[in-house]
Length: 116
Length: 113
Image 1 (cartoon, rainbow over the protein chains, first blue to last red):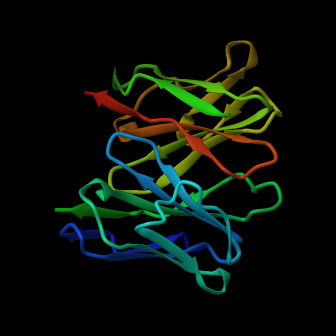
Image 2 (image 1 turned 120 degrees about the vertical axis):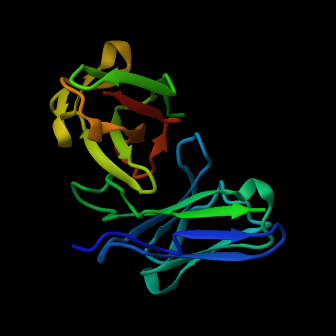
């Protein structure tokens, strides 16, 4: 079974530029999550999708961050314009959303963003 | 509100020694508890999960954790550390009816030769 795929692995941009990250979850997983992991901290949930609908985006800075999940499969997270404090690893995770494995999330390798 | 507190941002143990990583949780409802491991430049991988069945949970790579309700703890242990165990470990909590996970700040485990 293929895991959660993310691209790019690394991105360096200057402040005020825009950037986009892509995530392809495990096939059949209904729930998709985007996390922000700042150095030295645990992952913080930015947004959660159930199929192509948003379940929770309460911690997403909506003035600069946006996310979509087209057709309930892959997802894109965008930052526009980026700030220095956005430097972090952006992790995508997916889970079946139902059944015994409902609470288990499977993570991609992440995209490391550096904002200069 | 749920939360987890991991005691010690860095823990060093000698190869072959006992590994003990501490986690205390706060939850107003019966929790699901997790330990995840993150190797350098990789995503998080599930080590083990507690779901109110057995209080002693065995995970991958020889790790296990014990749920102690009276102490609100879920400490992670491994009898004998290996160099390959060097990584960052995250304790996490979710509600039984929910699939949202709250992560602790993590503990970086260093293995000394």
